[in-house]
Length: 115
Image 1 (cartoon, rainbow, N blue to C red):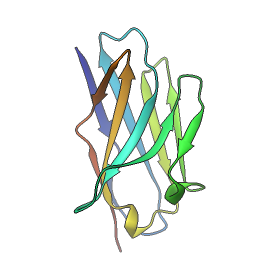
Image 2: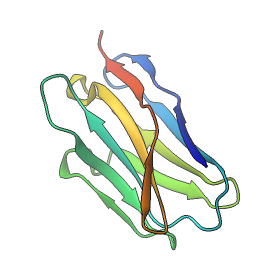
Image 3: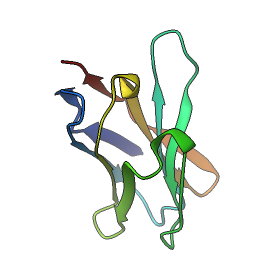
Image 4: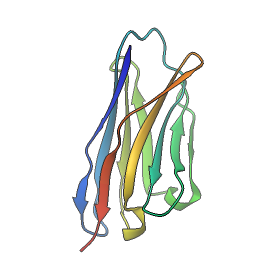
């Protein structure tokens, strides 16, 4: 069984920074891609950033230059460094982990950007 847990969310002022973590645990032989998604109230879930096993990354246009995704394969953990946060970044951020043909999701962590 695989568990995915996100952490690091919270309340931050506009222009501030947060670092999210996504840790996978359980019976895991190999993790393929990992990704961060977000869903704001009344909106559909959207991809924020993804990272392949080899470290290739992709980002939503709205976060390019501000967010950085990374991963530590030994720790089975992905990170999302978020800088220059804006109120429109407010959302529940969720992580997914691709193991074989199965995608596992965490419960999400709330990020609120407000003064």
